[in-house]
Image (cartoon, rainbow, N blue to C red; front, top):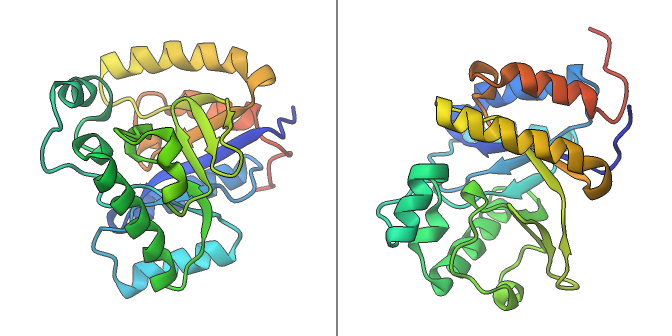
Length: 229
């Protein structure tokens, strides 16, 4: 089954996740996928070896996208942020603790980091937990990324339009998250033929309860036959 309108990405690419990210890349390749987009968190303790790995992945055809700055928060931005953290994002949705100026500064710093390390972002920015925060859409032209992805879909700075795509995810750390993702994924699998599809992988998904569902979806929506071996 071929699904050309499927976007595959691996989130949370950081110095301490390079080994499980490598394993996910190999898993995707075995299912017949071209190099998935890698969502890089710049503000971690990157060393020369880690940067070199990102450079090799980019040379191998992996688009590199921005994914926040530290992928962590120092404090909460209000009751709404606390609720979001409890239900969805834990302590990673750093946009939610910032105002619009802080969010723009973070996005600009994220984009600049790539050039400082001989890397080229492909134009996509995905806020941690897909939570854009208190940044009005009309101000997205004040930051350098051409595409911004949230739970809603992918927003293009060039024409101001949303591209709505269904979303599948597998990062279920407890029973509640597992149940919620099973329901959400079931709905979005049905939406995929008409809406297009995003599959968002996280470094430790293969060790979590929905690993089997992840493999089935990678096989079902693969754009080409799996590679031998």
